[in-house]
Length: 357
Image (cartoon, rainbow, N blue to C red; front, side, top):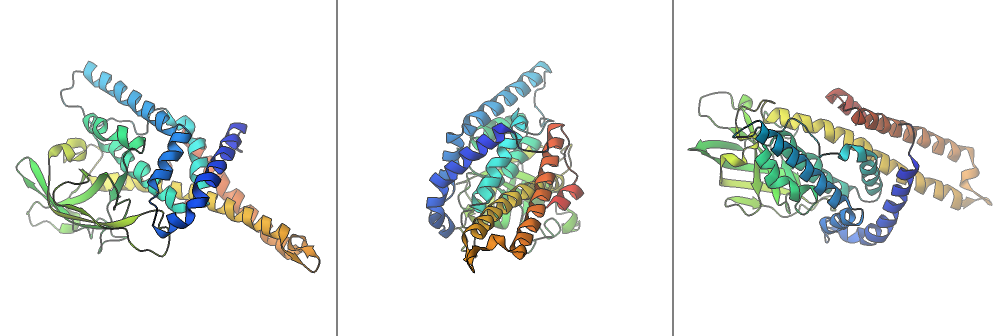
């Protein structure tokens, strides 16, 4: 892919019309925290038919997996080997346009939907059993429900795993969860919460190296408290908050994969796999912000006058705009390259994704 197609350009135009109609008039309410982002995101999905597309795609995918496992005579289906939501890979450029255009106007909107789908739903897809996918995914991919992805803790930022203190202990066939998470996107309003916790086996092992398990919680469970949205310096259109766990009882059906010995490794591997998607996603967000900045700068250069002419006629301003365009094209090319790899089923390495970010 070296340029946007005519279809992509039509989609971009439609997205910009939606943003002008639904997002810009509500920016003050979004960025003050007065208006949560979810009604606007659901309207976006409905207007562009994304909810229907995603719903049908995940329904087809799950039916295919159910038929495959039934034919194989499996009594307890394991996690599906494929990641992704059906045939949505063909719609990658559409998704990119939606994300980048929204990011240029309200980055928080993208963070809210990106975490819900790209981290929350994606973790269930990649790690959950078929029964778990059938239980939670249909409502998540359509945004009927919103997901949070909880790994960060007050004393464990960059050292997310080593410093993790949230823990679960076995209690018969169940687990008891205790601890706290912070800076959790969608945390205050999430219906479904993906929570990472260490297994406390009372075996004298170094707490830093204990196994990390991944669970799915639902809002309203006894012992689960979702804090109010933080008052932040910005991006209030992406609600962020704390989660508290006080003896939350979890059945094994809430342990992703329904086994502590997941074939893909423990929760650390699950989280690291999501880090790749998160870093690649940052490039799409950056492209949207750069495009909007570039548009505003060019418009200003054409309309701001000095000494009888617009400042775009001055070489210094032209040089600044030229350098900005070079940077914009570089980012766009990295995004195009990633899209091309995705179409061939290739996922960037963590090093490549980090470089893109």
